[in-house]
Every structure is written in C-alpha cells, then in structure tokens.
Image (cartoon, rainbow, N blue to C red; front, top):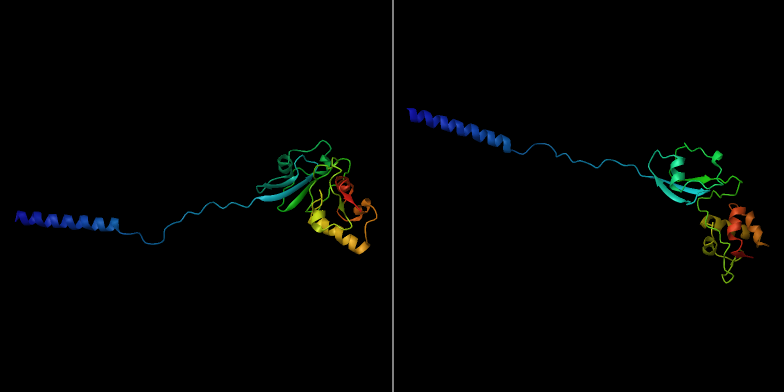
Length: 189
C-alpha cells in the first residue's frame, strides 16, 4: 500500500509540474508593444540678409530667436542698425530676416536675392550683360538678382521699351542703389 501511495503522490506531483510548465510556456495573448522613435519637429528655415558677415539660409530648432539667427550668420557688422531689431523675437519658418544698415543702405527684401560681395574688380575682358536683350538666365546670373527680379527687368522693358541708360534699371521694383552698385560694372544698354 505504501508503494501505491508513493505512486499516486508521484503522479500528482508530475501533473502539477506539467501544469506549471504549460502555464509558463504558453504564448502571451494580445499584440506586441512596438516602440516608436520620439517625435521631432522639422527645423525652422530662415533666410538672413543684410548687415551680417555670412548672409544665407539657416536652420534652427523651434523656439529660436532673432539673436540666435544673428549668431549663426557670424554676428552683426559694425554698421548694422541694432535699434531696428527685436533680438528677442521668435523666428518663423520660411521667413527672411533683414538686418538693416545704420546709414539706411538698401537691403532688398525679395525672397530671391542675397547680398553678394562687390564686383568692383570686374575685368574689362568680361562680356557685359545687355539689359535690353538679356535672357532670364543671363539676368539671373548677376549678383543680387534672382529669378523673380530678372523677370521684373524683362517685364519692365516689355511694358516701357528699352532702357536708355543703365541707371534706368533702378526703376524696376526690387532694385535699389545697393543692388545697382553691385551690377553697374556688369551691365550695359
């Protein structure tokens, strides 16, 4: 009888052990948790022009201020008009930040123009661009002239006739004295 009792205890212990194994090894129900990367916002793109050493397109994190943009562009030039700036203003995506000069120098605010280094050293061998016959591409290649302003030059000559002098190009919207100074040695009529 003792043997039967041991046999029954052994069978019961085996069944209990098997039950625990089945319970532990079964696959969990439901769907697996998939971790997603932390959401990041796209950077703000700001076009900086005017009285800075390195004008151009810069990207900033959300919450960046005008002072951050000025720092990215190399700081302010000596003749920058600091009083016209709100250094604490938040930057906006897709906007142009214009840093004015103290002397009121013309800084064009077209989205397609950038202040470029002066071209006073233009060699006499270079072929001048005739503003009365130049194509959109030829005008666009001039410093400070983007595609929009190039089209305005063509539209002006179509509506008003040929330019009499190179100074007449300043009648085109978006071309002020500063831009004219950059291109005057590169154009002709």
